[in-house]
Length: 75
Image (cartoon, rainbow, N blue to C red; front, side, top):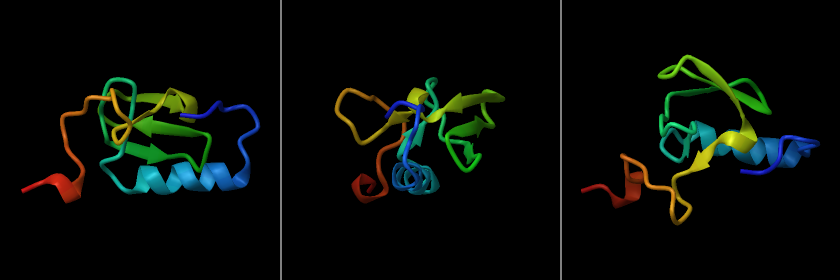
């Protein structure tokens, strides 16, 4: 993810939309149970921790192995 310093409103909105997808954005431990704090932080209900946007993983990026596949790739 991008640096937390001086994220533009457009960039915060883009990341917030990805978080709302539910499957795509994960905490550093791989959990998807994130509650967006309206940028640039989220709360992970599974780890009971807060994270900055820059710490989050995007499951759609190569190399980020996630347990759950995107909805369009599920059978």
